[in-house]
Amino acid sequence: MTPVAIHGSRDDLLWLAGLLEGEGSFDAHRGKYPRIRLGMTDRDVVGRAASLMDASIRLSLRPAPNQPTWHAEISGARAAAIMAEILPHMGARRSGKIASVLSAYRWPTEVAKSASCPGPALTRPAGIAKPLSAA
Image (tube, rainbow, N blue to C red):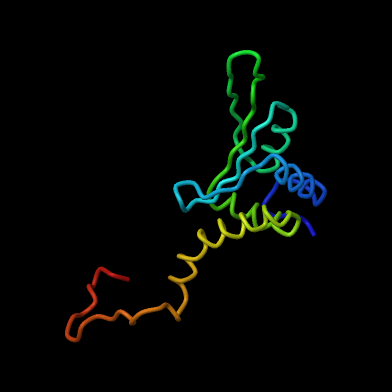
């Protein structure tokens, strides 16, 4: 099985899942966009994770004695694809969080596409023609 959502091998996917299990966070940015965030003081580890996820890296500096912290963050469809791919390798708590984020992200689009949408079917009133400009 070759991972589709990340730039790497199956071993890289398992490494990323383990890292995100311990150091990552999963949420829905603005309530609807899946987001993966990682923050650590180890630049090389955050850099490898960012390369695998195709994410950007930023640095945050705080007054001494705090160390510089490196952050990688990705959101949207790519984050959803990565979450779906690492989901089977996560623990119970993280799996539940990922599942809730993905269900909130996918539910509106799947319902709109399905024929069994709750509520009455919407049709044009009798005698009202479709505009010629509409395809």
